[in-house]
Image (cartoon, rainbow, N blue to C red; front, side, top):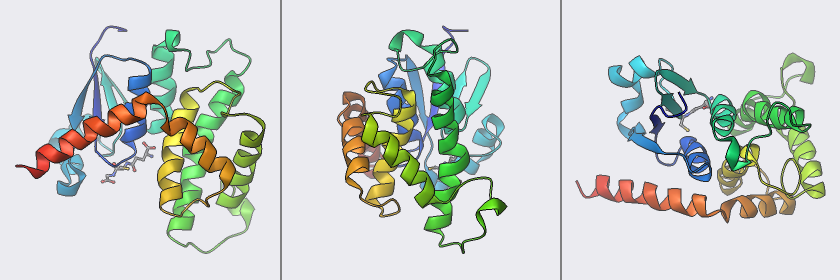
Length: 210
Ligand SMILES: N[C@@H](CCC(=O)N[C@@H](CS)C(=O)NCC(=O)O)C(=O)O
């Protein structure tokens, strides 16, 4: 299975950017299948047969389909243990590692959507997650202590959070707190980020020249 081909279903300027950065960080041998969200390719029959939810990112690994950034972060980093980007099941930081990754998809993204859509606040106990400001307080407090979520070494959870926070800060959804900006800058400096930006820009230029 380890050697089965990896295909990333990817759209430029989307959440699959972070997954592609992770694949680069892992030095994975992978192929990209681009989906053009502007023409709703993700909702076409061909892609829905692969991922019935019609969302990116998704990765086909042999005959396994992995979708959702949270699952992809855990799965892909575990697949390449030599990268050191996963905190393995035996690692004492495994709990915090999983907590931060799950927190991102289960709690942070919904709270971001609430803010983006200006949803009316409801009593905190009505929701399965805390509001954005509360979550950012915990995140900020952690990043005041350590350069990355789990210490001073980057891990797969940081690729997920760091790439997402960059867009959210640029779009003024997340406030420009220095501690978060510095974190985003650290993740952004990774060569894998520049590489994916370049590769995505090549695809955009090709589309525009058609
Ligand atoms: N919960 C999903 C969210 C994925 C998602 O919303 N992807 C967007 C791109 S950023 C998408 O596929 N949009 C196309 C659509 O909704 O039709 C995850 O974390 O992977």
